[in-house]
Length: 261
Ligand code: ARG
Image 1 (cartoon, rainbow, N blue to C red):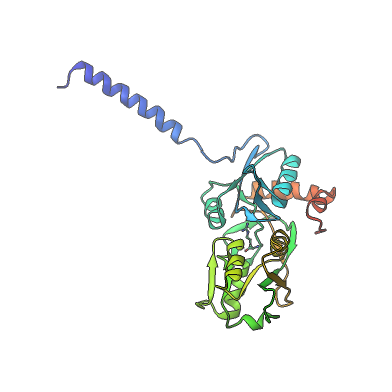
Image 2: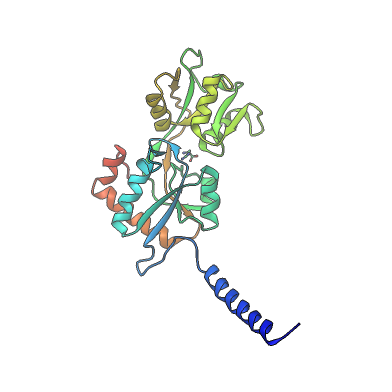
């Protein structure tokens, strides 16, 4: 059975698998660290969040976050590639280094700061309540005992928990904000809580939705930042450097329509 020929074949196989293993161990993440640190950045997002990120007819990811990241990329000489991975995967994939960073209208929160590092803020936001146009609801307090639709693990979700208690069965958490708004249209939920610019963009793009937005002074100001794995100081510094440049030269304000320090 064990003749010279099989022995040779086995050697060949072994050699081949060594070559394969060597290829496999190559870093598959995009964080191609050139002499400047990062020459290409793989950026994760959830692209149903216009005007920050959405898909156009050609299947490209477009929006404020894309424009801001491209402007930063130009400053720090890094190529920027966006990937629409979904909201919760953004966090998981930044943690396990499948992504270099998350750019997804992510609010900088103390809780998230325990696990991630954030750039300086690039956008100021706040939450809004969404109800049917003919709804009598006018304040946050009035939805304390009503069904509220939110995007899961967002600041809107947190606001609903704060209002109704963490374990409330009346909080309906969905994968993205447009679904949450749709549930108000359907009547499944009495209200939704979402990010102001996104709510207003949705109402603008869906003039027949029959929905309206309500402001509440009880929602605090939020700041969006770009999110890297905790401890990735090299990338964080680089992003902040690029961000500072586009703050200084007016490019950021041109993109977002907002001035921020
Ligand atoms: N700003 C909110 C948060 O950070 C919602 C962000 C949702 N972003 C998205 N692309 N779906 O919790």
